[in-house]
View (cartoon, rainbow, N blue to C red):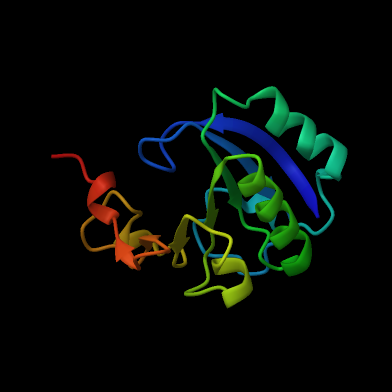
Length: 149
C-alpha cells in the first residue's frame, strides 16, 4: 500500500482532527476527480508499519481520527492499519468512490464516505449529492453535517 501524501485535516470528518492518508492506485477514475494523481498504482511511498505507527504515536492526544482516502483495494493491509488505529484509541474513517465496502473493512470503521464524484451532483456539502457520509455502527447518514446553513 503506497501513500501519496499524509496530511492533518479538519473538514473531512466533522468534529474530528484527522490524520489523512491518501492511498494511490484508485481504479475508478471519476471524471472531475480532485485527486487524479492517486490513480497511478505504486506512486507515493510505501506506508510501512513503522512509518504509520510513528505518525499515530506522534499525533496521539492531538488528532482523534485516522482517515484513509482510498485503499480498499488493499483489503488486508487496510484492515490491519484500521485495527491498529483503533487499538491506539483513534476513530476511523474511509473515503471511497464505491457504493459499499466489504464487511471486514466496515467492521473497523467509525465512518464511511461512499459514492463516486459526479460533478453536477456535487460533494457532501450539496443536498442533491449521490455521496453519503455514514456512521457505520448506526448506519445513520450524516450528510447534514457538511451543509452550510
